[in-house]
Image (cartoon, rainbow, N blue to C red; front, side, top):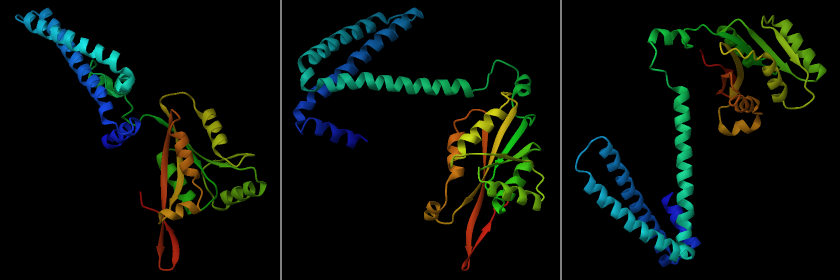
Length: 278
């Protein structure tokens, strides 16, 4: 990264390294001024705590801050158009960027940390760690095959409230899935949504919104059947519907996505579908 940035700066200044001196000078004297000023503030805080003998140190740092600050102002005024402008622009931008990064980490920590001002027993009673939540489980299926049957079986092991969801607007496809449902005697309720578009994501999201009760103790879980190809290039031969659904639901609050992989392997000259045991 440093090499790339250095090459970029050299390209901006057309290789004239003498033009980089103002950049260096502004950076150095900015650091001197800020550090000396910071020490003045530090000694002031120490003095308020009652620490003795810090006045002389504070005076030395104040003189240093004023001296380097004057040099910094002179460099900015005299060398602004010959290179100092770059540092003057970059330093505030970097400061704002770092401030935003710090604000993000602080915000994340506030949301994830456990409160320490309450007893552990009272905290445990309010945390979702005792398996007391309800599960509403949705399994999107495109057809009845080994992948979908294994996924439905896995979903039933997670909870009783399981619903299979089939999205299509083709009459033959709807009749076919209903016939297979009956032939295989599948005990999971089947919901069929008509969709005039090729993408199943919009009707899936609408269905999820209708099921979402807003209750934080009710987990809405989407269990996705997905087979995994043996070679990376085989992924381009199949649609990535499950991957697109996962990418969309990842940013939807209150929805848990469970991926059930089905791994393809080759035995001899014939391809066989096998599932990893759970």
